[in-house]
Length: 102
Image 1 (cartoon, rainbow, N blue to C red):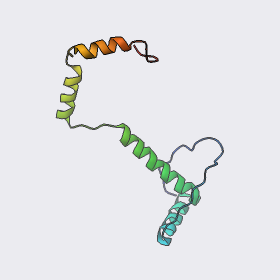
Image 2: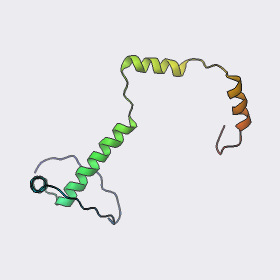
Image 3: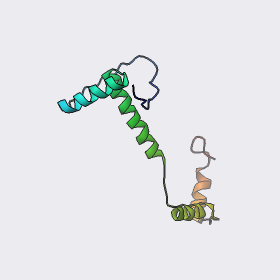
Image 4: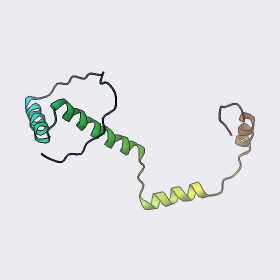
């Protein structure tokens, strides 16, 4: 058996169903890989898809900047702001209009 990365399955009854078409050669590779890992083909495919989902979710939620760009961004965020009169009036007028606004 091979050690493979796994994901924690979602608890509860599996009710959704997906069908897919693939080349016979891909099907044979998946069948062989599933057998080598001791998984049913459906479990192997589901785990592979969920691992890809995790990878994409992590990539989407991460921002990677070169050090110089991050330093510039950090400096801009930490710099003192300036009051823009029209925006200040609009902010004051909108207080209490939005739920959980401060």
